[in-house]
Amino acid sequence: MNKIILNRGKDKAAWQLHPWVFSGAISSVMGKPQNGDIVSVYNIEDEFIAYGMYNGNSRVAVRLLEWDPRNEIDEQWWRNRVGKAVQNRMPLLTEQNNTVRLIFAEADFLPGLIADKYADFISIQVHSAGIEKVKDILIEQLVQLLNPKGIYERSDLKSREYEGLPDTNGKLFGDMPPEFVDVIENGIHYQVNIAEGQKSGFYCDQRENRAITARYVKDKSVLDCFCYSGGFTLNAFREGASSVTSVDSSGLAIETLINNVKNNGFDSGKHIAVQSDVNKYLRELGEKGERFDVIVLDPPKYAPSRAALEKASRAYKDLNRRGLMLLNSGGLLATFSCSGAMDIDTFKQVLAWAALDAGKEIQFIYQFCQPEDHPVRASFPEGEYLKGLLVRVV
Image (tube, rainbow, N blue to C red; front, top):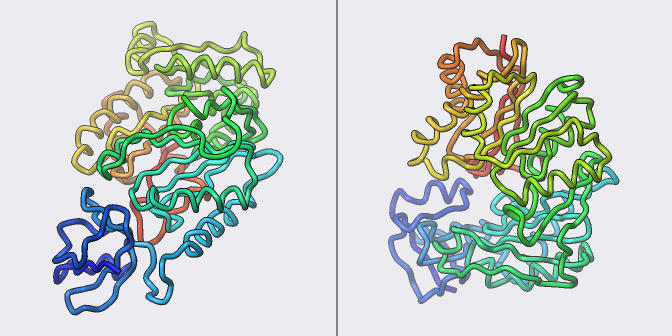
């Protein structure tokens, strides 16, 4: 097997079970590993550390998989990892929830693989050359375990460029998913467009946070920003919101949202759907003197890296300032960040600055996080990306 030797002093993270080895940590490469090949990783004293997937194109040159030298990375190893990930999610699949993240990359010891279950279909994304090489094995195992109607790949990702991989979308198994797949989350029906929707089709990482936020909306006016297909909107209607205004820049998202409101039998007369840039729309609402009781801000990733954090913090502050200014006294802001580089303490500080600029006094009353089908390995804190705060204007 090809062998990677790490520089002296650069092996600490690998010994501590962190799954990434950066190219700058490598002293030498023995053999001629191709991108995606399995390699053995050793320290400078020639002590075995782990097996991993190599990629000479990537800044993350090795993605570590297994630290026990007896457990070589063969076909059965891959099948076992898929099986464990799926087994861990089975308690989450009920009559009230038939959508779940089945595989969450490094968290499930499968770096570069995302798999989401949408009713009888599975949507996957492949981020790494190593996973690309064994994709057929992984698909076979998912079919064996879950017998889906179809598996569709949505690997149109910037990360594939860094791995030297082209974008690829299309059916991998069974039936092509229909334009809209009906899924159930928290007992609410959603139309999910697997082939053309954002990410893999839906954001099941907000499942619990939608339900928690909805506890506070009975007889309240709600503004749902970056609403996508309406997760917070639909939960709000189910829990008795007096009105909901939903805003997203995507025409497909707004069209899907309107259909979701209708399909669940909610009163469309209490709903306003707006296709607009959210920041622009918030400014317009402020100029009109509009006010709401509950506002949800669930923006896209503003900080894709540590280098972008300062700029992202300013964007988060401005967005939340505008939201806070639209709240009635005693109103609630459910605000989120899906940027892994933004930790919760920094996010709280950003909210404090936003409140100061808005002339508002606030209380943090709840801290949101990602659900159990998006677990965080103790050795890989970077997997903790989703955080949020429920804020009350005093």
